[in-house]
Image 1 (tube, rainbow, N blue to C red):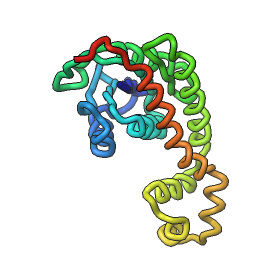
Image 2: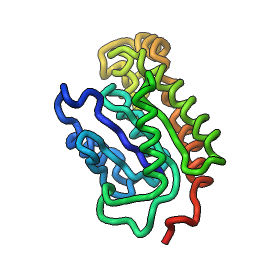
Image 3: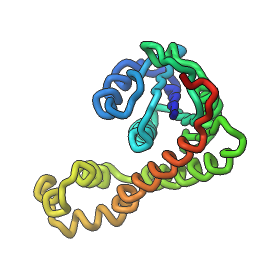
Image 4: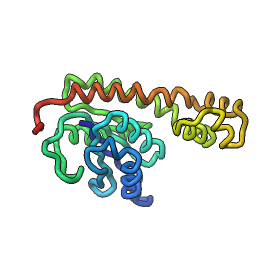
Length: 208
């Protein structure tokens, strides 16, 4: 399974974002979660994710705000599951803990770790590609994000132009500067990579 542990950045000097973020992630990615997103260790959130595409989406949503260090762990989880993510245990949670500690030292605040040593290379590959995407997103302007959000909802460039009150050429220019198309097209391949890592990282240990 996939575990995401996110630690709020500078939580001592900012408002507590855990509760509202947990609700937002649950509303957006609920179908891909094994259990509801939970508070952990005060200013952390944890998600136990069964869908790789949902996991990619959660990572991208959390890192976009700049308010979270995000660790993604892949591995087995003890069965049967309890009623809350906070009660769950297993190597995937240990991997996520190692990942979030590493993410705190990363410029883009993301890291990925695998339970099994044999998959360390694949986890590192996924981390590198995700960091490349995050570096692109970090440089995007507010205007670029406006176009991104509309296209991510499934709107066409012409529809986005009408919604924003600008020309289709202006939308195209914003897409080019913000590398919006590259971003959107990267989500599915990242999901496939994570899905393969998750499937190879499963082990009999901890299964029912």
